[in-house]
Length: 476
Image (cartoon, rainbow, N blue to C red; front, side):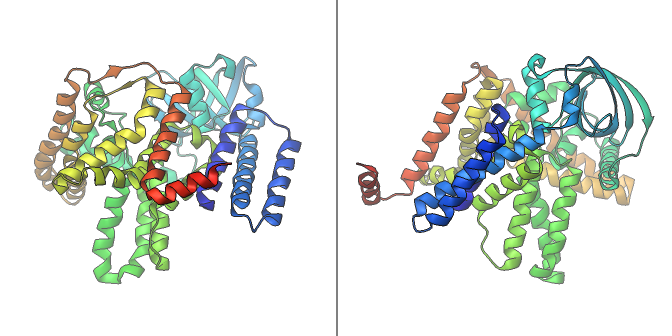
């Protein structure tokens, strides 16, 4: 309970400080009051838990304030700026993050033309107008918050200065991914090689527009985003291979290394970072001989992510990943019990699909204003095809590395499975109401929805007698 309340307080503090300004004296007074309650009220568990929440909230607010401060932000709204920095990440087509070296350290979000082809490690001189926050479009403001960017520069003029700058590890991992992408293009049809890359490492930048639209409209776009499922396959396969040779305990460090190498190849997206941290916590629990607690691992991962990058709290992918995983941890058992009369494989497939949709539905309506009516059956049908496509794509890649004709031979089978994945998405996307536009949901209904889910989960764990006792204690 202290961990859950502490992380909830921390996240609340991040959100509060991003929305409202408070003087340092207010934070200091709140922290002193919380520490006093911790020291003086140790016998009262409720007071201690309240103090933990309040102290974590204060620390979160201070962390967000420090992240939002910086000399680079002062250039927003001053007209044209001149920046010099290194391309650190590509968010989507034409959208790049720049690690700014001058005139001040920080991060800038570059909204370039779609045809711009920048690479990780490119050193650039940038000229453009830094958009003040008041004039940003909603998606620009969301991207800036999610990435921690101090400046947003639209349609900048770019001058290429050098390449190969930045972190050597990031450049090496990026080079490996580019090499893998080229091999897949060589041994798979052009239409399906980006699907193979998406299933293995995540990403949809190179997908044909109609394929990308089909996955989105069918509610299956998440299969092309590297996530905990990919991490579990990587960790499980490596552990199965190394356990007979080294023993389970000695194999764990190699599993941990593989998790973070895979996360790097996947581009350290929010969902994969969350999954990698949860996987690392699980490996640590196995190493210590303690049972793994998925709920605690999820909250610990959220804490580490937002300590390192407070802007992650605004990342839509991170939010969807968090609530989907939370749903599978706590809501799935309730859904599965209610479907107990079904054949077990069908119950598990339907339970997972229903849980994921129930957990992410309000956020999807809040951000995108629409939903796919056929998302649950689409995910049930595509679920067995995803691991097959992922493993066959990886096998094709490894075979191509050993001998090109062998890679082409495996490519025939891989293409058939990838085509089946795309076929499911396109079939479901073609059905009526596959992309039902409902209008954006307000914030209060979203909060009310999740509060209702929490109450349902709480009721499901209480016996009738315990519930009556709790109500009487809460009364006057």
